Length: 317
Image 1: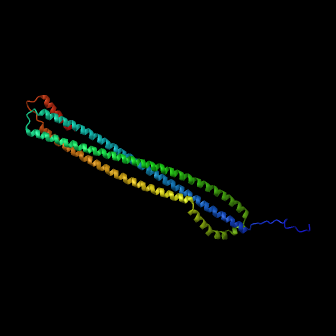
Image 2: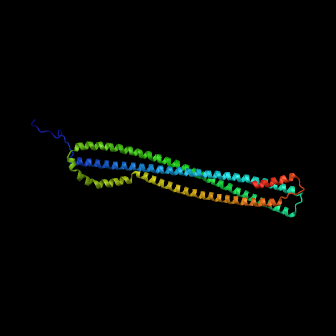
Image 3: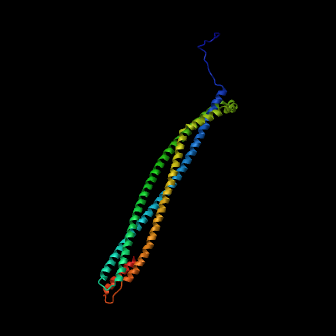
């Protein structure tokens, strides 16, 4: 009882001071606040990305509608080409009928002046048929070029949409994983803070103001370095660059569609002009044929019927 204990029997117990415990709890609070701010920013970025993705989808649907309209225009051009081919066939039949008429009227008592008029009408019809054939070939070439351009645009739009969908899905999954991780870390930190606040007591409240002033500048520097080296910021920058490239591509496609519309309008105007010209030439041809076809009093009724049939074919075309 009266003997002193030896050095080996003495145990040293270090108890942290209240100031140290308060400083540790303040550090945890600041880290928790920074993590909460990061989670909120990631949620805001996620919502912004979803809005941008919906806007891109709307633009994609609009571009698809425009492509469908252009496809309908090409189909209408093809129908017009088919009509032109039918007109050419009808004109050839009319030419053959006029040639037969000339062969039948050679034996009749026509004057040289009437035969010259008939030759002029036949030559004019030949020229008109040649011009129609040239216009038909040009229309076929233009429709083939337009079809190739539309197919290329459709392939580009499909590749862009698939790529954007893949990128957006991957980025959304990554952001969701990061958000879940941050939420788990926040819950853990909140639990630790609650335990420390229960242990620290009232003395920690008195020293909280001084410790916050001392650690505020240091935490600000640390958060700046973390955000600079954070892979999420790099991901956000990559997303913004991709969105900018998609906007540029959409504007370029819109300009190309405007150009194709202008070409289609030019083709339509040329078609209308050719149609008006054809009507005027047919009117002149009918007038000349009316002058040429002269029924002799001594001719039989079958020759008269053939002449009327030829003139009727010219009127229908």
